[in-house]
Amino acid sequence: MTFAVRYYTKTGNTKRLAEAIAKELGVEALPISEPVNEAVDYLFLGNSYYAFTIDPEVKAFVASLDKTKIGKIINFGSAAMLNSTYKKVKKVADKVGIPMDGKEFHCKGEFKGIHKGRPNEEDIAAAVEFARQYI
Image (cartoon, rainbow, N blue to C red; front, side, top):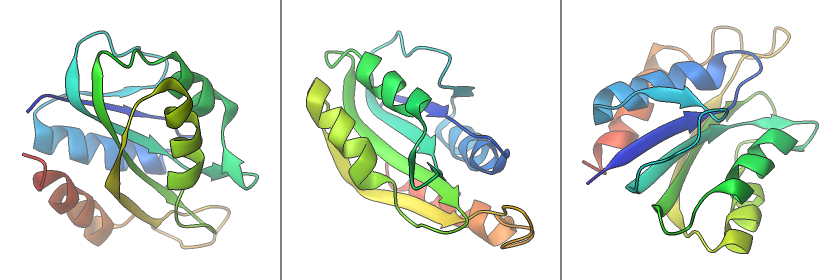
């Protein structure tokens, strides 16, 4: 299996998850400003909710992906209020013809004092365990 890890974060929470996942997969976690140039079986895509939707940069990144290079997108991230960005990411992925894996990982993320300290070490360990099932 081949992997890539890309993430978008404003607070650093999703970056921490991305780095842990990437380390487990033996790849580098890169921001979505870095394109996926190589063919991969799985693209782990980290993101979160901002104003009740995914950031326009995440939408643009997914829309720019080459469907001949990405087997499936695996969604992950953290958020203070809402749990899953899956449907929002899938909507864009469907438009470009890239399937989404049915599983995803999300945990609480600290934002303005809410969920202080999250993602914590238990969250990071859970993200690593989630990634491990794809190896």
